[in-house]
Length: 240
Image (cartoon, rainbow, N blue to C red; front, side, top):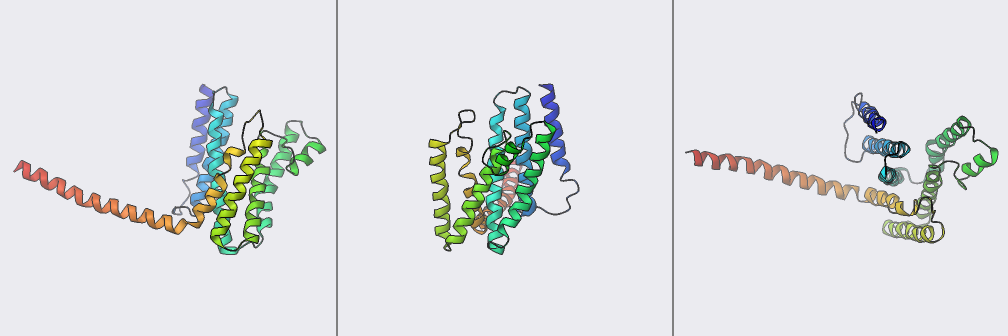
């Protein structure tokens, strides 16, 4: 348990150190904001799985929270990018920023653990059979990209895009649950089905949500500002 506590402190310290040299201001759901969330989600997954390896019971399920946050940010980022640039260089960006780093790290890891074979790596590379316990995520996120791309390519109406997106993920959830449930990791992918489309929905309604949050903040400031003088006034009257 002491090693887990030390690991927790180390991970937390590394995460907080990332903010020290950041001079930019964080605005709600801007690039820096979502990057910080992604970093937190990745470290959460590492923390939970490391805890499981150190015999901390049940902590591996916390990793699901990190995966959900990462998928939400991915869906959100894709929608924001689509609103600015459409589908221009869509696959090039995904291959260079997501797939290529994974393939390189996976290759190094397989060699380092002496488990590399051409067949194993090719199956992993093509997202047919993960070579590691975390490899399932690569295939999962690629399918998310495919669904997003197809919906945006085939449907132009924004409301119908959201209907098609949630509908497709709903069908995938049923198929995954009925035919592809892994007994070793039950419903590992199925329980994340709403995360990615929820991120897209968040991006679509970003301006509306910002207005609501700003309005709520202003109301809290105003009510707080008026309540303090009235409180002091009542105390003065009582003292008098």
